[in-house]
Amino acid sequence: MTDKPWPARLSPKVLAVLDDLPEHARATLRDVMDIAGRDPWSFPPFDSRDPEGEDVHSAAVGQLTAVYWINRPAGRLYVIHIVWLG
Image 1 (cartoon, rainbow, N blue to C red):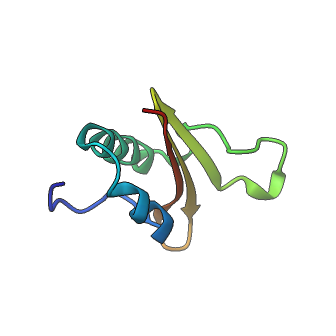
Image 2 (cartoon, rainbow, N blue to C red):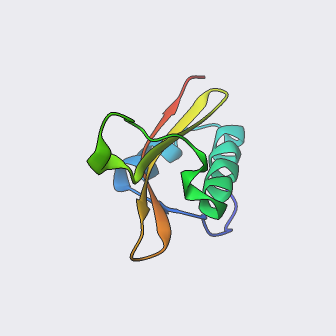
């Protein structure tokens, strides 16, 4: 993995899973979070039926899904869960 900083904060659970992912999956996650960081609302809400959860979104690309929270006061994203189907 490169030493380049992540475009989003990663939860401890995500950090634990990250070490087990193949390099191309880590690169995909980095790219997806970079895209989401530019426009956090570009991916759909995790649960569109929950009006109070409007800041929790899921970004799915290929075999990877990342669930992230938009931290409005801090102006950054926080990845709370990832799923890799590979």
